[in-house]
Amino acid sequence: MLDVKNLAVAFGDIEPLSSVSFSLKRGEILGIVGESGSGKSLTALSIIGLLHLQGGRITRGQITFEGQELTQLAEKDYRKLRGGRIGLITQNPMTSLDPLQKIGSQLDSVIKLHLGFSQAQARERTVELLDSLRIPDAALICERYPHQMSGGMKQRIVIAMALAADPDLLIADEPTTALDVTVQAQIIMLLKKLVKERDLALILITHDMSVVAQTCDKVVVMYAGRAIEQGSVQYIFHGAQHPYTQALIKCIPHGLSKGQKLTGIRGTVPTVKNYPKGCAFHPRCDRAIAICSQQQPALIAASDAVVACHLVGESA
Ligand code: SF4
Image: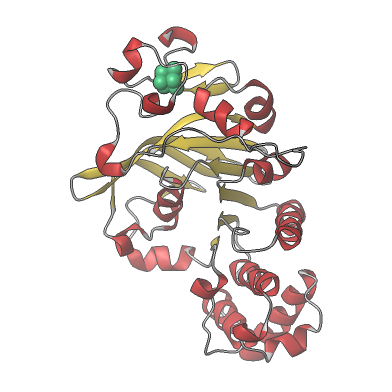
């Protein structure tokens, strides 16, 4: 369904994203993980055609969605795709919902715009959609404003907005970050169920490795604007070879007893203006060797995965 090849993005003469490649089939959930500033959201903005709003542009690579090349698509055609065949779920529901409009009319508008329904048909679909997302009293909820709902309920409405036009691909950018843990789990379960029931493809952008472990089929790990390792979820959690991926997994808190310290990764993610020469992870890597600060490791295929590290495969 989606094929991203060698994607690179620039803001002026700064290139915060380069060499990002992955593909996704219907029914699959792909996790894009990494710390803040690794390029996850820029990848999403590139796919959904909204980079220009932040002053960025795609400088290299292809994004093919259902056989259609998106990097050359005119804005008027992108508008049909966005909110139509590609749905976006954002971190903060208030960036997707209009605080001044009732929930029902916001959903009706999306349905009318993308599916050409009449007002009566659109409202019928809105109520059906809210019912299918287990939102109680759907007809009543249609008459409410966003501020009259809890955080978890608002995020369900954002998911309903993303699903309103029956998309093939959903992109969820940190969809649970602003929610408390029990609501997070409900939203993640809901997304998994929707992918299965509606045979969608989902890109889940997150910094939370435990969410990835519970949800995804495939994982792309990003660091300093590059995809540095990718493979199946089993590979990532049981056979990851990149020291950064291994460090992210070690940071997952489980079974900690009182007073025991959480594990972290020393140092901080470099800013885009200060990407280090060679492997961008080398200042934080406990296994760095001489070449790491000099030469950027190439991405190489290693069994059923792809890794960029001098310690792995032919680069070693
Ligand atoms: Fe560490 Fe070197 Fe591998 Fe980078 S290339 S992750 S610095 S060992």
